[in-house]
Structures are given as C-alpha cells and as structure tokens.
View (spheres, rainbow, N blue to C red):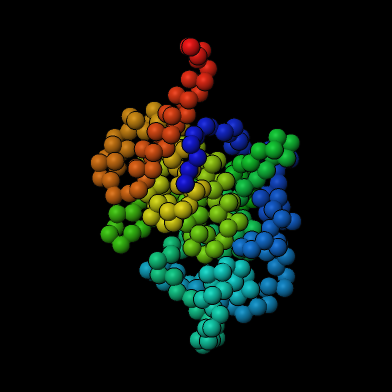
Length: 273
C-alpha cells in the first residue's frame, strides 16, 4: 500500500507573491475538462439544468445545486438516475455528511477549487495555499484548514478539512478532487499532534484498505516527524487505545524505513573476502 521509504520531498513555499499567482483551476483547466470526475470549466450550459435539493447532516442543512453540476459525481448521477420529482425539485439526503465539507465539494464542482484556494508560483514552480493577501474579502483565518468533526458518541474533535474533503471525494467518485485535497495537505505546517492523529484515524475509517495515497501520506508524515511524535503523550495514548490499522501500518513502514537505511549503509561498506 505504501512505498518502502519515506524521504522528505522538497517543501514548497507557503506564501506566493501576488504577481506570480495562478490558481489550481487554471492549471488543470485543459487536462481535466474531459477527465472523469473533473470540475466544469465553462458552466454556462450547466446553469439552466433543474435544481436539486440536498439535505446534509443531522441538522438537515439544505443546499441547492444544478443537476448537471452535481451529476459530475458518479455517486449523485446514480442517485438521481431513476428518481422522480418530489414537489418542485429532486431531493438527495446525506445524513452522515458534514455540511462544511459538502459546501467545499459544491464549491469545487462549480469553481474547480475550494477555499482556501491552491495557488502556483510559476517562476519557482511551487504551490501554496492562498494567504490573507489573496482572499479578496474572504476574511482568511488559519482555522479555515481545520474543522470540528462531529460523531454520534460526541467524541469528535478538530481534524484537517482537506482530509475530510479527500474522504468525501472518495465516496462521491471525484478523483481530481482527491488529488487536489492531497496536494493541499502537503502544504500544511504547524498542525498539532492530536489533530494529525485524529485526522489519520479519520482517514483510515473513511478510505478503503487499498488506498495508497492518503494513508501513506500520514505514515510518511509521522515517520518524518518521529522525534516530535516520540515525545508526545497523545501519541502514546492513541497507541495504547489502538483500534485502528494505522499503527500496524506504521510499524511496517518503520521497519521498511530501517531496512532501507541498513541496505544503504551496507552498500557503502567495503566488502570483506
């Protein structure tokens, strides 16, 4: 599921200058407009399609969207295929979905990205999340990258929003959105240990076992930051609680990482005959 070794890649800069910015939507416009699961690049013809009502979460938040837009997702296309009109519009209920995450899904389907947007520095060929200088009235705050995940047992807590978006994209069949959410997660810095571990557990609970992207991202992150996690009481508590495949995968990944170091060391040592 994951690669043998986890080496830190060149980290992209966190801030992009205004003069060099280019949005992720512009970057993927040509390659994604015909790709399955990609967002629309010209929504003019889509905005005359019927309106769909989506009821989200336990508090039944209502969202309205165009049928041609939401049917870019195979999940919603299948849900609406044989549905008759109920009153003035078709209706989909998503009681287990979080309203904040679904709002990001709709924003992506309409605009090709979700807030905070991903920007590219074309001169340096690096990517970054938009900062206060790029918000254009959004009122950017750092907390936009995390949100409070609610559970039935009331044991929720802060997790990375990009992780939740990735898992929702997995459910709704939006492969391009999964790639976007994963890229955004790689730009996160300064995240607390408890948020990382809670997000990793969430990822394992909401992705299939064959997922080789998001799960491997968290394994690599923990290994690269092992000094921090080794000193963390939160990490110790989470491991003692167990109940997740995360920690066995982490053990295997650490063993592979050590084997790679040993192999590299042995290859440099002079052979004795």
